[in-house]
Amino acid sequence: MTLSDKLFIDGTWRKSASGRTTKLVNPATEEVFGEVEAADVSDVNMAVESAHRAWESGWRDMTPGKRTEILFNVARKLREHIEELGQLEMLQIGKPVSDARDEAGLGARCFEYYAGAVTKFCGQTVPVSRGGFDFTLRQSMGVVAAIVPWNFPFPIAAWKTAPALAAGNCVVLKPASLSPLTALKLGELAHAAGLPSGVLQVLPGSGSAIGDALVTHPLVRKVSFTGSTEIGRRIMELASRDIKRVSLELGGKSPNIVFADADWERAAESSPMSVFANTGQDCCARSRMFVERSIFEPFVEKFVAATKKLVVGDPTKTETQLGPMVSASQRAIVEEFLADARRRGSKFVCGGGRPHPKGYYLEPTVLLDVGKEDRCWKEEIFGPVVAITPFDDEAQMLRDVNASPYGLSGSIWTNNLSRALRVSRAVQSGVLSINSHSSVHVEAPFGGFKQSGLGRDLGMAAMEGYTEMKNVYVGE
Ligand code: NAP
Ligand code: MG
Image 1 (cartoon, rainbow, N blue to C red):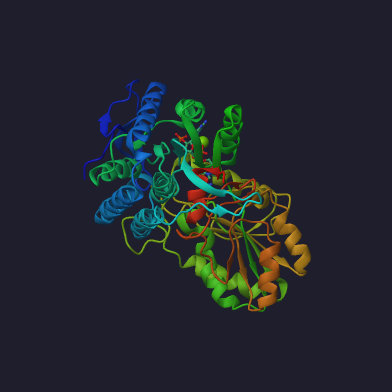
Image 2 (tube, rainbow, N blue to C red):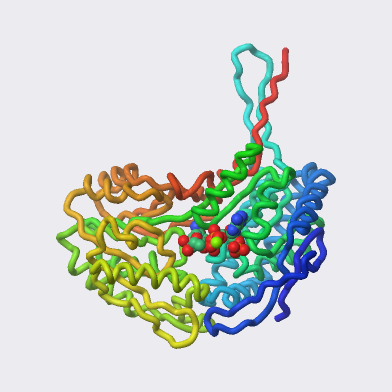
């Protein structure tokens, strides 16, 4: 497998102006396996200008039918390369190969969905009171900068790029430094499938070196970001200077709420993967569990038994469920959280250590007796750690759930319909599942309340976010 290791600008591979490169480390082996060019500010300018030219000179005005055809061709090309995309993802971030393949498929599905959406995304006619004729247009914005993280590199790149392109924008995609390979492959395959040069540029490079230049470039009309709340805040501040559009998908501290009337055995068996999947490096991770007191002990017992059965290890094996963490520094951050929990006297029911001598592995860890003021309760850990607490009273439990500054996702387990509806209204989050842990559907809006973000990815809501609405009135 040959690695694409340069910048993808205007349909060609280019070396970075600075000559700088980023080394890629396989988190499962700790070995360097490649090196990728790292973009400089002058590369950002070149990519944005080229994207703007591509927008003005064709993509913006292409017929919806033609744009649909090209995006379906991109989706088909991605489907033909699922195995390669999965292998690249596994290599760069240690994602278990079965998950990596599934996520490559999710990215392809995203292109299929938005290819179809091009001809179904409509404005309105408005019955204005003075007569005449009034209608709205949904118009493309120009250049969209998509800045994506390393935890779900390929699907998130797809779910920003596909709707932005479908809505008639051109995209400069900046992958995380740890995970440039599947983004570069997306650029290459999309181009091979007939996406015109300049419509999608892929710029690997360090966020701290090129982020400001990309976000503040006057031709970038919208910044679509997924990552930490800290960088999201910075992007929003920079974007405020010229009222640039932003959508932000940030951190989470999502609850998993289990009532005694639920099929709680099923909840206990399925809940470990709601927090430990992707080795906990998931903004939707259900890292705070609230379990009704009458079932608390048997629930925890079953939950821990299911956790101990999880296969943690070599991501190349199809049976592996949890791979390593993405990097030594991410693991160190999580171990600092665990040290804090130890100092504060939390109970480690299982996990807490390193299961393998090589690779950035960390055991899935179950904590009890975590105080409501402790770091492990309040902050996003972004690793395989869950805190479980009993509750007695629904109203108090909801106050605790909503005390978090985050509001991304969550699960509710109950067989009482009125309770399910009441609690799902009360939980302050953008995404919720009842008797399930499924958060992400290509067809449905995804995003957060409060400090979990702004705007929505996926579904038709994402198309709205990549357009400006214009109202046109025609006099009688
Ligand atoms: P991050 O810094 O927010 O990285 C996300 C993306 O933003 C990457 O492409 C990154 O590039 C880029 N970036 C970094 N600095 C930037 C800047 N000044 N301007 C514009 N873009 C910039 O996240 P991280 O440092 O990788 O992870 C730190 C913590 O963030 C994690 O522990 C976790 O809590 C949280 N996180 C959340 C999500 C999520 O899905 N919500 C995803 C990842 C991380 P580089 O890779 O080159 O720095
Ligand atoms: Mg960072």
